Length: 579
Image (cartoon, rainbow, N blue to C red; front, top):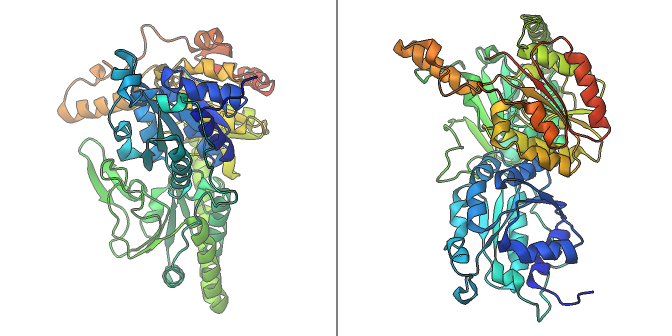
């Protein structure tokens, strides 16, 4: 048995110390030292997950982080692997996902570089490629600098607002034999700073403004990143009788709660106060957009007051403009909403206790909103019946049939929401039901794998309503799921097109007077149509399809769910209407 220790063993010690359970990767010689250490020194802990593309590796870690609030590692092969993964790292950044990205570089010692290959795979300041959209990057120069850099990286990554970091390890540094003991971070040292608490005076002012408002409305975006945030928002809304609009970057509020007014922007038309809680995207719910001309019109009255509680510009990047348009709020409070919301609720309850009229007003608002919320759900249920028997399958019908099949299971929706129909028709009653809406094309399937991995040990039924175009970016990830025994149910949202862009071309055609019937060119995914069921079967999945008619969809779902509950991934290729 080998007794020598190597520099890469130190990295494994740190991965164990900081409890990173999995490492998704695509193989690369630049981390061959670390690979050997994980397998033989670390006992394959973290568990290595083989992926067909570096983007997939980062996306799996992204989904895992969203679902658990905990990080996992993604390991990238030197410069080329990092360049492959760029988009996934960017999406993790704008989605506040803590991903511990481990990179490598060809030896910085020129005398140790192999001819050509190590030269073209080595760059000066490799982290510069992702610096605008990581919270921190570093490349330790000696093995003794590895523990401190690792500890700082973990702390920065997990401090709110969270995000990915990039640690780059020199290939030759990894492969050197250790000749001394490398000091680890002190036992008992705090790994992450405490949360940011709100200014008590400012929070009291916010409570006073809310108490005086006649028609306050809450917008929440990242509140539900912690389960206690989800629960705290319910308490605040109920105490104040305040309608809630959930932006859905995380699941922030129960979908069938009587105060849930998501997807009902009219709630803002008579608002006299808008309370933004950990919200970047305040503009989409509060404006009307004419997409073809890019004209925005606010639907919030001009004299309405605005309160913003969150991380302000702490996450602002000088490169990526994910910070969006500045909302000139009447009161801005820098704080973690997980702390701020319970404190605000307590203060608001105090105002109500001292003035019973405020409690009566809150109760009236809650009753009025409950009537509107119920009417909305009833309207959506009626609208879902339109084209009920149509072929291809309508999105509301698909959402309804999947809900009927899973509603008695302990289920999780991974990412996509079928153009919001699941959020309108399903009962999202617990914070873990949905880690947040999908992001751009080529992200959903990888993120969904990470979500399924996160819930695997709890035996939850993870459902991925999977767009066809997205899966085509990385169909090889189907193999990763089967290889690592990750049970999940994939129901295809297969409209045989990149229809989001098709719609944009239709808008251009209408605006310019060009033929709408030519809008599909360069957008359709037909002739030939990909056979997703055959593709999945070839990689070890249970699969059926294509299913173009709703007839038989229910039994097919039951068969697929039985396979998933037995531990095998299952895919149904359902062909849907274009939207």
